[in-house]
Length: 510
Image (cartoon, rainbow, N blue to C red; front, side, top):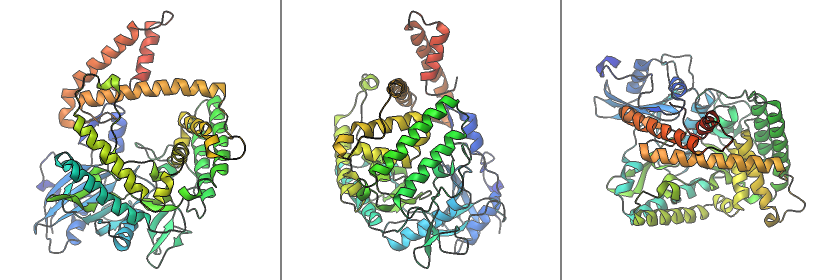
């Protein structure tokens, strides 16, 4: 059997990220996406688990945010997908173990179409491949993202209805604990709770509860035991709050900032204890896809309203329903226009009408789902606060302050006896006002540049367009700095104005 890399073009590099570059933290992001493993050994595993295949005849590399994916084609015409996780994708071994268990659980317990796992390993150091991997069947159909613009408004509604039927099936599943799914084998995590002979629930494998962020292994050493599993809702909230405390204590921030943040976390802890009874109906455990967007849904090219596959179940967990009640898939988002950004851009009214209908249809489908529907009936700001705590927003002082302020503003409507534990101080109000103004300005700039340069909101630019984008970007940056200097306050120096401009500018590339 031969499956060597020299059969591909000299430019084919399975180890480095080559799809694009970033206008922000490019070097750090490129370094984080470097993978070292035995690519030929991975191809051999793919051949061995594919019936009738003798050798690899083609291989295409696809880059994802947390994985490198290879579409492998064999001499018999068959195809498989091999996925290798980045080091920051989640906790070693557990991330892969949980993804495999989740794929098997969803395929066996529901009619949601997921890829079949053909081979996998959760060991990165041992074995011939030298990294964790999952090899799956190649899903039929076309990616929804690639065909969405060609579909009619009626087809959009029918497609969202099809997605709604699938999530209703997922939300109907019942669980006795919060955490992630694993196979009930000798390798299962310690203390795992069996569901049946094949599956069990163990610690949550999400990046945030292990201290991982986008570009590095960890931003904080979160102690083991805070990741679940949780058999009751109060312990879940208590551990998430403690993770926030661990994170800020290790961040190296000034002591005054740490004290302010700790004070807010204590107020958040008290608030969570009080609202847990009000939120009981919105806290039902559900297994839900963590990234249910158009790039992860495959549809029938002859009838794009029919879903033939849903991929990328990595980091799926059993979580309280409110975690997902505030999320909207990209294909169902209602457009929010900013007059400052959109003043000189012509928009198709029919497109926006279609988007609003899609948003409404999605809201109806969510409301009809068991448990998830109950979460949408919860006070929206309270729901956003709970979801924000679950998403790790407690780690950011401004986000936590904003979430608590929103809950405080709704306290009377919630009809909870006694005052809200969080009462905004003058300093909190000042902090929120300044940070919100800064955040809104930066977000407007980010959105403007994204549209002008045709790049992603995080500054990602396709490699083939980099040389085209850079001169335009630099011209925009220079113009923005000139504007800030020209419009500076009387007592403000040019240097101070430029520092303010750099603080507002969303990307670090110069």
